[in-house]
Amino acid sequence: MEIQEIWRVQGKKADFEELGKIFGISPVTARIIRNRNHRTMEEYNEYLRGNIQDMKSPFLLKDMHKAVNMIYNAIVSGKRIRVIGDYDIDGVCSGYILTDLLKTIGANADFDVPDRIKDGYGLNERLIKQSFDDGIQMIITCDNGIAAELPVEYAKSLGMQVIITDHHEVPFIDEGDKRSFILPGADAVVNPKQEDCEYPFKDLCGAGVVLKLVIALLEYIKEQNNGKEGGRLKSEPGEERLRNYFVFAAIATVGDIVELTGENRILVQYGLANIKKTNNPGLQALIAVNHLEEKEITSYHIGFILGPCINAGGRLETARLAFQLFMAENRTIAEELAAELKDINELRKNMTIEFTEKAIKQIETSGELQKDRVLVLYLNQCHESLAGIIAGRLREKYNKPVFVITDSADGAKGSGRSIEGYHMFDNLVMTNAAARCLSKFGGHSMAAGLSLPRESIELFRRTLNETCNLTEEMMARKIWIDVALPFEHISERLIDELKLLEPFGKGNEKPVFADKIAAINRLQVRGKNKNVIMMNVTNANGTQMEAVLFENEEEFRQGLLKKYPENQIDGLFHGYNSNIQLSVIYYPELNEYNGLKNIRVVIKRYLC
Figure 1 (spheres, rainbow, N blue to C red):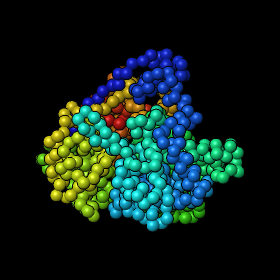
Figure 2 (spheres, one colour):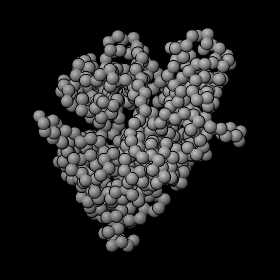
Figure 3 (cartoon, rainbow, N blue to C red):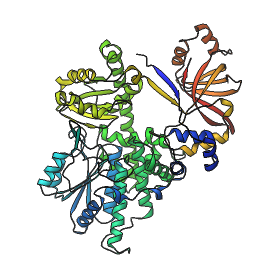
Figure 4 (tube, rainbow, N blue to C red):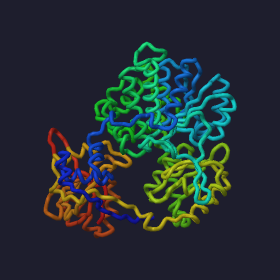
């Protein structure tokens, strides 16, 4: 199933020469920043010079005053408080931040988390009943609860106070032209996505919202203490501890794949700059077990190395493992927990590969599935915690919305990942899919989770595809190029300047450039798996450049065969010069080897 690919160069306008002079950057860098939807001088200034002091007051969040007042009174009166997080990286990090802070300032607080298999996502009646039996008087959620209308009602009926902190979309019902939002009846709901919340930045992750709560609570305590230490509660948890909270919020921000713009970008910049300074034994151990002590940790390392380890416990065992890791005060215990999480993650990776391959085979051997615009795959033997990862990989491969459904104790459970132009949550709400097929669902534009009877899976697949409005053009993979930049314009200064744009992630993607290769002068295949292709190339203007492509040799051959004869390709792989031409999308880098530096380009995509 071949995906149509459309390359487009960003065309956003501005006076890039003038912006370059004002901010001391090249016009190329100024153009890239504009491509990230920054228009005004203020937005450029925040992007290039923003810091954590620029973050807005947490008291702009709806119900924040109410929440911190209630928590303060609960602490000073000795009430038992339970923080209930979620089983992913955001839920664990936010749960750690809040629980650790509450304990530090003297609260009688503990932590609980749903079991992915037994409970599913978020606050539920079992967790509330357990809390009640344990003598808990206040529940504070982290990264969940906005859709927990009935569980909150149950908690309130038992006499417990409930504070919701969340960042997910508020559930709604459309009645004609009117949209009615459904909020749980908690004592306070802190979520920037509430319609009447005045907080200007709406894309905080769960840990970002909890960090705001922590800052607000500390300010409130200081106010109650009349600005002096020695009051009823401690208002200064210590500089290192507070810095750790920012670091963990940054880890969650990257790991939860929220928009890396505005305050999120500022938070992640600060977190990455301070992650190696952490005195948290658990995080230190996790960095060490992944051999990152000597490396500069970037958003890549969080997204693809540290984050998956944190998530692994909640997927295959329990999220308490990661929480215990971060709460550990003993380095030996921390090292044991970090090693266990790494081992679980290795198992998770192998299982993911196995079932992704099974899903691909299911698609490629089914004419019906290949025609579907929304893919619904039933993998009955797959661990349900892997459904979202596999859906994401299939979405990348086929550029279609994907739902992967697995067996669960009480039927079937699925996770969905979407593409631009298909709002996954809205499509579940506004089509008949929810009413006809689903027993439970939630999510947002790019992802969703759901439960349904096994016998409804095929009906669910048909319903989604019958109501799908995706066109062929919408399903074409669109690749946006920041600048068409011939190789001769690359310099060490530009490569160094591009670091100003970091950290990279969703909403602040790593910039890419394009040029035309007129000839491949030399080619070598390296790597144990023959997946590193080193080339010396000449562009259309006669500039030579070293290039590297991380692709399997056979895949590269097959790509070239779309245009060039086999004997010409064989000659290239046997060391002969070639006039094979490629249009390439690339990123420039400074390669260092044996003390020598040279500029090269990393080819991200190519067309013959």
